[in-house]
Amino acid sequence: MLILALVPAFAAEAELLVSSRMIHVRREPSSSSPLRGTIPANEPFRVLSRVEGRGCEGGWGLVEARGYTCLSWATPTEEQPVALPRLLAFDPPTPDEYWSYRETGTWERDPPETAEPLLPLIYGKRWRRWSAPVWPSLRDYERGRPTEEQLDTTRKHAFAREVQTARGTVLVKEDGSTVPLDKVYVYPTSRFQGRDMVDNPLPADILPAWVFRYDGGRVRLAPDPQAEIALTLPHHQHLVVDASPASPDGRWWRIPNGAGPGVDGYVDSQEDIRRWYEAPPPPEVGEDQLWIDIERSQQVLAVRQGARLLYVTLISSGTAGRWESPRGLYEIYDQMTWSDMASLEGAEEQYHVEKVPWIAHFYPRLALHGAFWHWGFGHKVSHGCINLAPRDADWIMDRVQPALPDGWRAVYLEPDEPGTLLRIREGDTEPPDKRQR
Figure (cartoon, rainbow, N blue to C red):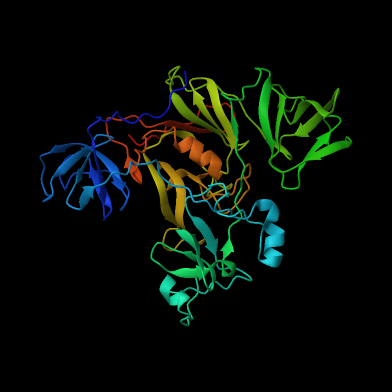
């Protein structure tokens, strides 16, 4: 049986409220109690009961996840809470469109009414041909007021919505600042997604694999780098290989019928493909326990239940050297719909990414999170975090602990609450225990 992240049941008579301000959820009904989570402004949430507390004129409410919130700014609503983040019906460029988009500044867009919701925000930057002039408000833009301001080039910017105006289509940030769509570089976003092993199981003697070479995966007629190339599979093409390697060094893997009916193909797991690397669970993992297993050399993540595979996909971990994602056993201790990520002050390599989506920290400054700014899943490219394609991030965050209640933007683990176990390993060697408690 598949065990999903559980949110405590709520009473049928629970109040539905909404606040004009962001709400801090506390562990106890006191304004000095540690944070349990946050609820964004204008998002409905459930109050299970009214309780006594300290430091709030409007009274306290018991909410989901054993949290308490001050109700001073809350008013009744009939709208039901929904799982966050809400996804926008906006069609960004695909990675395949990158070069033509760079050359022409345009891409083939699905209109909002048919676009697949992929990300919670629209992400872009000022770069090359895109000058990105910015107006302080939509009204200023619509009135044709002049501006000399431009987007900060040191940031990856997040826009809350797309607006059609008489002067053209614009992107608007949460603070109201407005940029014409054709003047900002919109990040091409990967539509890659891993394999759901419950809905699409494989035989025990077959492993899931993917092409990670940007120029395509070369399928050869023999396990030899000099052998004839029968065909080349596109970047991120999913394939299956034998569970055992086709060469003593473990480099070559056979694709049954991979070069045509009755003709096996062979692929190189160092140069062309990434594949799932099996290893037993840590001894403490229970048969029904959901946990995350990351194999660093192959850049593969698995969501597992005990020893069973539920989901397998490619990731991008930290680059070799100082940014290498450290091997270890960890525990996820928070979950956020999005948050800014920035380099430390004085760091040699400066970066600032606004509202990185789907975040789950497992160590200070290290997290699982969605990545919209590259499509190199299967390559090491991060500053230590585990980068996920948006579809994968959405699927995985729906299942980890601490679970994010509907309507909440962030939730933080309580001392007596188990967070999802996460292992980062290299091969089948058990890594050190680096959990924070």
